[in-house]
Length: 495
Ligand SMILES: Cc1cc2nc3c(=O)[nH]c(=O)nc-3n(C[C@H](O)[C@H](O)[C@H](O)COP(=O)(O)OP(=O)(O)OC[C@H]3O[C@@H](n4cnc5c(N)ncnc54)[C@H](O)[C@@H]3O)c2cc1C
Image (cartoon, rainbow, N blue to C red; front, side, top):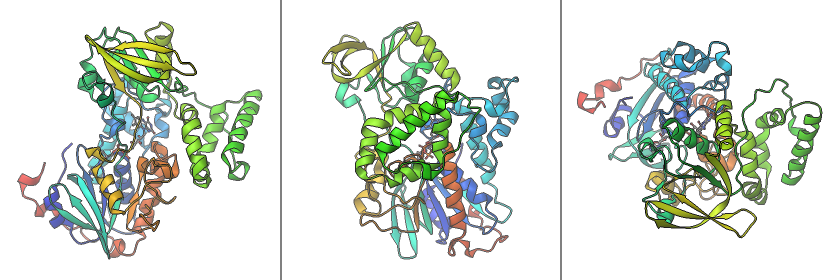
């Protein structure tokens, strides 16, 4: 998908100081832009800055059909108040036809993530036309290297040298990469970016492969390898050896009131265990309980002490995520088959070291709960250990810059940046600046559950309605013709 403007021209085009700058062009950014475009109270200008390709963040870069969305289509509309938006898109999209079964309502189906990318691209296409009241959304292909608040405006500094003066900036920079294993284990064997399709395809089909991690990404890697005709042994290695639970539709849902939930971590965990047991005794499913907790998890997390948050992340998070983020049914069934026939095995342990031997790397795995070392030869090691903020990684330069200038600070468990429940980052001294917001996974340490589409879309809807109520942004009356950035561009600038 082509972007409209370059950074150098955007400053000229929208430098009226009254636009919303969104940094990032993944799901979070597109969802927020779409919610702003739907507002009917005030016409505003929105500029989305994406350094690479729109709608192609970590979740949607894959083109592998075996990589499925982990929820049914009916749960994944970008708009909570239009629950069938994604399912309706699928019904109309010719590319979706081969993945849709006639016998099941589309809302209940699990489709490839590539179709979600197409859905986001369709939303982007619609955003290119001004809204009925004149709200405009423009897309710039450039990296934001700094965001600098001033009195009355906020500067968005671009890699190509432009500086755009915004009224409000939103950080929607998504997931950081996993901590690289290549430098520690051997660059020749390690694939640190599991979404690098060319590197995955280049693995010899009969080679032994080690996948480090056992969450959804690890299952995706297994299914991607199998789709490439892989016949060699695949070993998943993770600290606890836990594999995500399968998604099962829950017919009998339950409701939990916030007041029922203990506020401290240990009593809460006991409560979850006993309630889940009671539910099972009554013929219910634990998934109903996990679903019922969802509306409260951000608030519960917010109430925990730093000690409790650390304890949760260290000891309980893997169990929580295995139950909370479930595998698409087809993925779970396939994984089970592959494990049964022995091609895939799961090992609980840690990597203790590695040494190259001819065309393989021999990993030494210390099995969980023992001193025993297992030798695991692997011709390729795929890093699925999950995101980790490393500010020395050039990919995370903006966040590193904002942390060092004190515009933002780490959250207390250092999983992301410190934000308030409404998504406002706190600066080094703990002060909030109403001109800056952060949406999506960067707020994970503050909100815990802000990764999934269903959580992010709520955050985007709330932020959009707050932004259009802002006096400075709403100064342009509804129905006024939007200023035409197109005229500020020479054709050479359009990409
Ligand atoms: C593998 C995977 C599978 C998932 N599957 C599901 C699922 O099935 N269902 C579900 O509900 N959720 C799923 N999720 C979670 C959810 O979809 C993601 O959390 C969500 O897409 C995050 O979107 P984002 O825009 O915040 O981040 P991203 O998609 O990572 O996008 C961030 C974008 O910001 C750009 N960017 C970063 N820094 C800058 C900068 N300085 N300047 C300019 N651009 C910048 C990046 O290039 C990138 O395009 C999945 C997540 C992953 C990782």
